[in-house]
Length: 73
Image (cartoon, rainbow, N blue to C red):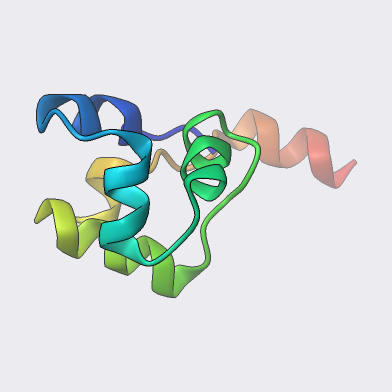
């Protein structure tokens, strides 16, 4: 899932470790989120949105219909 985590983190001059500590997760989790290798749980997505004071939709991009239909075939 595409997201803006790296950009949002950079705007605040936070390291991956800083963000991880604020969210109560590992730095590896932040790296996996930023590289699209891991989709957050709903509670973690809300926690991230709350931390950045944004709606979830402003951080995470919904998969396109093309991607969804391809995975359902």
